[in-house]
Length: 89
Figure 1 (cartoon, rainbow, N blue to C red):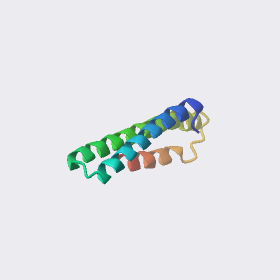
Figure 2 (tube, one colour):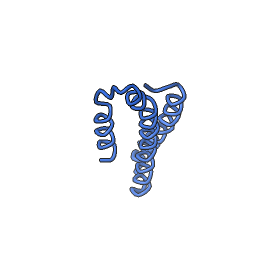
Figure 3 (spheres, rainbow, N blue to C red):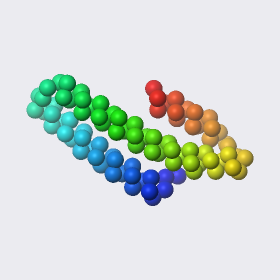
Figure 4 (tube, rainbow, N blue to C red):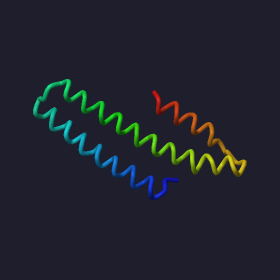
């Protein structure tokens, strides 16, 4: 479960990303140079990856670690592996 600090960090990052996406929309509307648009899209994709890493780190430190400590993984390891596989595709 996401704690307040992780939530706050993720929300700040997501609001920034939202602003970047709106900027990209404006660039497309204004028919800006394609490479400039691609560069902004790349920046958004990287920023989303960073949010994903923050959330995944929290999941590892809390949910997965707790399940390992209690000897009740209940599929948490497999779930994490699947999530990592999807994340890196």
